[in-house]
Length: 487
Image (cartoon, rainbow, N blue to C red; front, side):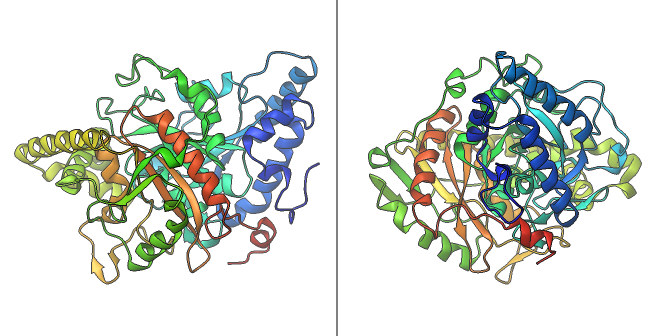
């Protein structure tokens, strides 16, 4: 039943939840699905550069074993037979893990990290590693080792970052599911730019034992999919604890159960265009207002407002800089000429902060997190844009100005996503149609830490509502057009 390259409903494009069911019922074979995804990679990756290291040989062996298990009636894992892309920041046994850095261009680990091992245990088939900026630095998936990853709707434009390769792979059917991570928006920005779904879980929901700064709650691992249900499927496999991650604790096993759409008519939702003054282009401000008009009518109490993010920008910059000093200062000291500019920039700015500035940033961080928690005594969720500007030329490392207004730092254009990070929010980025250029536009549904199940259920309901309108439904790229080199 595999479709042709021009068939927008081809096997490789179907939701992962549906593909998993078809494998279980023997309607399709894991081998058939894998070959459909490999064909997409071989056809489109030369144009998009989403998969930087393939694992085809081992994946084909695994797919044949998965097929035998189905035919034998064996007990099957949650992800049995699904081709899955792994972001190149996650450590994979026997498969190049470069972190997008020239310094690790030959790094072949001998063990999987926990999040990858969990995917394999549940029957997921690792199809390859997806591109990322160096050590996940920045909102444009571009590095000095593999180059840039193109947007699936315009390959000359950025796909966002840092989970850009995963987002592009999903949007174009190169894989059924993909892993990602989020610090200042690394799941949410590329999901928005590529028309897929990204979920930033609460800290510790997916254990991350390899983080060099293990006591910072900013960096989390999470799932990406073409639908909210797909994200939940991958999350159910990633879910788990590891005592080496102090935040992981006891997993919320409710997240391992299938979700259900929330009743939007029973909710109180704050709609915030710029999350208390974050940079936002006029075009995207108008687009956000227009795209949410239909959704507002479905929500019981939808009102305009802003969370209090006083001092969030400075606190995030300082704490991010300090974390980069801890993780990367030795690399900058010994190999600066081999590193990307923004990795170096973060470390050098971090080294310049005084002890007083760091102390003030920690106090501000605490206040922000407490105000965010208090907000949800009054509301069920906050909805905001997931990005501030349209996708830009990926040859530019970042955004320097918006509507003629110069930005303070290279991260400023990502304030819409890093401000919620500072509050330790959980968040779902959802597709919400296209902008005037025909490029995907996304929104984010935000909640307090620990409300992952509730926010996912709200996201399911919002996704269904948006999907009822062609103007707000998930956009899908045309593989045939991409294969012909159209821009």
